[in-house]
Length: 226
Image 1 (spheres, one colour):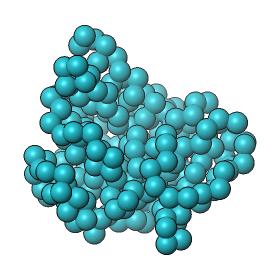
Image 2 (cartoon, rainbow, N blue to C red; image 1 turned 135 degrees about the horizontal axis):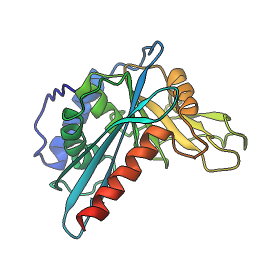
Image 3 (cartoon, rainbow, N blue to C red; image 1 turned 90 degrees about the horizontal axis):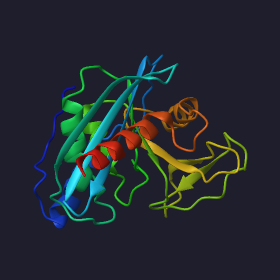
C-alpha cells in the first residue's frame, strides 16, 4: 500500500501537538464506502523490556471475515507514552507494516480513536490521512467526551459529545451486556457507516474482527520474539 506522510516522526511532544493541529485540517469527516470487498485491521503490541513495537495488519474478505493477508513489522520504540499522542508512538511502525501490504482494502479499522480525541486528531485520523483511505477508529476505552450508557443489547448506541456539545463519536454495544466500544471517524467515512461496519464486522466478540485479528497477530509476534 502507498503511504504518504506530511511531517517527520522524530519530534518533541510540543511539535507533535502542532502536527496534530495540522492533521485535523486534512481529515475528511464524511464519505461512503460502497460495497467493500476487503477490510483491514491494524494494532500494535509493545515489549517495554526490549523497547520494541510489533505492528500488525490483517486484511480480511469483507463478508466471510476471513484473513487473506497478514503483515507484521517490528521496530524500536522512539516516542514516550503520552496520553493524546499515541500516534507518534505507534503509527510509524503501523505505517511501515501497511507499506508491505499487497492487497488494497476498501476500509481500515484502527484500534484507537479518530475524531474522539482532544484535538480531533487521533491515531485513526493519522493513519487514514497517511493512507488516504476510509478509516474507522474503534477504541476500547473513553479518551475524551461525555455520553449516556447505551442499551444492554447488541447494536444499542449512544452519541459521544465533546465539551461544546458536538458529536465526536458513537458508543456502540457490540455484544449483549458487554462493555461498549467507542467508534469515531478516522478519515473519508461518515460516522453512521463507521458504526454500521463496526457491527457488521463483528464475529460474536466485543472487538470487531479486523482489529481483533490484528491484536492476536501482534501479540503472537511479540511472544515469538521473546
